[in-house]
Image (cartoon, rainbow, N blue to C red; front, top):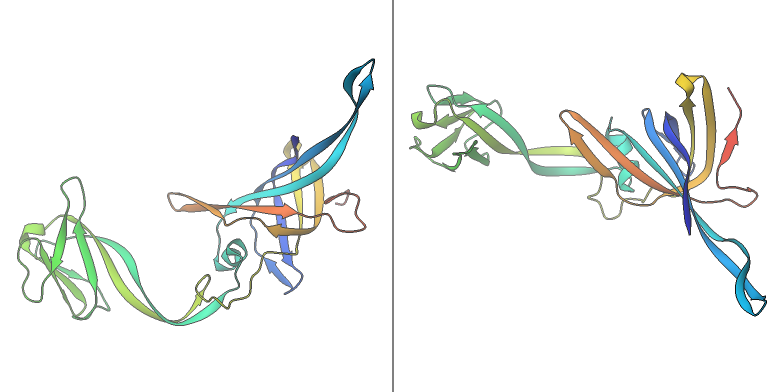
Length: 247
């Protein structure tokens, strides 16, 4: 078995789903196209000794790995393999951080006394804060209209909060079990650059399918996503991908 990298580098890319005529937004990416072959041997007796007379490729697999910066919700539809649908109503926790003011009153628009809020003092000496229905004691906090109220004991401390918010008509990926699957029968073309952009390789992949869920990596405020596709060879093509000399 042998594995080789046919193409590797940075380039520009498009991914199209011919079934829905969707062009997925794909920013400049790191692209790697690899081929792995399983060989078969023909053996025979030579001078009474079994030797390999010939070998040939019995099967091949081709994989395209693409890494790019996450730019929007539409690309996640492709990455997760499910079409986007609309959720009529959903309540989710939203993260936040704050510094408790000296008077203990922190303004937070949209809160009501019935809003579910969780809170914890952050840091090495951090501790959970307990919701209170009345004026909070040390280690407690109170949710009121448009504000969070803390005890003076917590003044100046960093607090992490989770505020449960309800949203309506939310574009959603991965919740609706009846949502159509996407990610198979895709078409792609990309341009790889070399020698400072003076040399270009233009590659067309007539058909490929998403092979796995994405790998997400976050550094600061930048999130990158790695997608792995299985490249299929179509009837009438000598190779699973085509190299074109076009400007």
